[in-house]
Length: 198
Image (cartoon, rainbow, N blue to C red; front, side, top):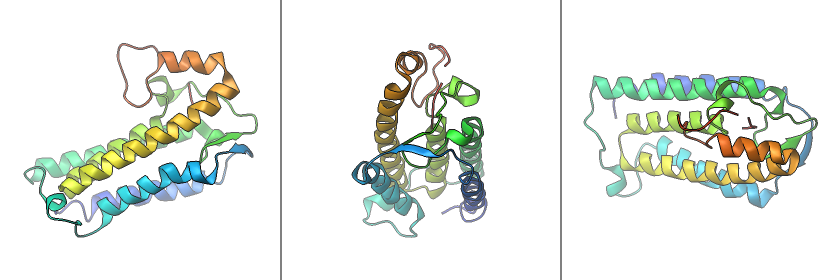
């Protein structure tokens, strides 16, 4: 494990968690919420991903294998990816304002957000977190870290499918147009800009 992982990267994640916890207090009243089973379908893979990235020793020989050659450049790229990803997620959270929720919900007077990073992707918080997880995986430098990123991607993809069902139900054609114009997770120069909720 390289020198930056035990120092800068956990500090960045901790700062993000503190901000997230403080910002979560100022959310609108919940109108509808997903079922416990639906929530578990994305929470459990995220927990496994977190364990794979955070545990000191990998379960099994192959998963502990090194991915890249360690060095100062790799360390710097890892920290930059984490910082950029978390900053992108915070930007999205600020733009989302009181419409945000940690679980799939519809808020009272829920708004369709069309500003900031929601012009580029429909789910910029997930985009930012995946970028930060990719940086953490690079710092961890083991195959299990890439498995963690894949699990997180699947969890976020599952969660955004549930969210988008609620958004279509709530906003109808306006959200359908937004979904046709703006990609879900990866910005594309070939699509227009538009709106969203996580």
